[in-house]
Image (cartoon, helix red, strand yellow):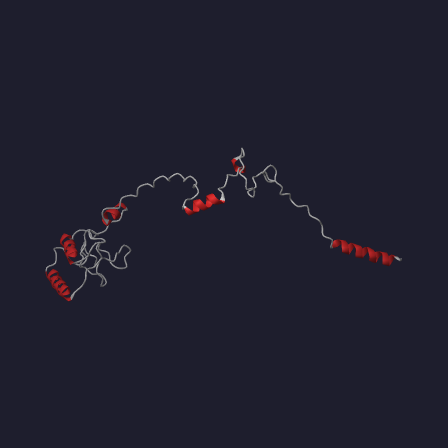
Length: 204
């Protein structure tokens, strides 16, 4: 046998051994006195186990007959102790009696009828208290004065201004419009003293 034949046989033997399955040493799952290899109780063991370490104990389960009776009677296994009741939440702050009071607390003031019905009677009350010679404010303004074709809200602000609020308006009818038109003509014919364009209490 020459050298080439010896080399061929050695190569064939080496390649065959590469495909030989290698035996693996399995991990033993044998029980040691009711405990698994890791020292914990094996839950596959049907027998109860009382151990010094509660984590390694297995409580006795009810028999199948006891389970059926418990199920048929609608009973349930004892539930875990309920968690302690949470501490009561702090009482919510009482809402402000009125929107103007809340606005005043935040440093901003609004008119008397803010977020209330802004009808003709409310406007006439604000107009009666309006002083054209005093600075214009949410408490002192002409509710009938228009600016760029718009009427003010219940605090004297106009659409486009930052603090404007769309007021709650009443239903409109033809008869009501005729009454308001007559009132407008009466006010224009008898303006308040000091009511001139550019007065302190005017927007224009």
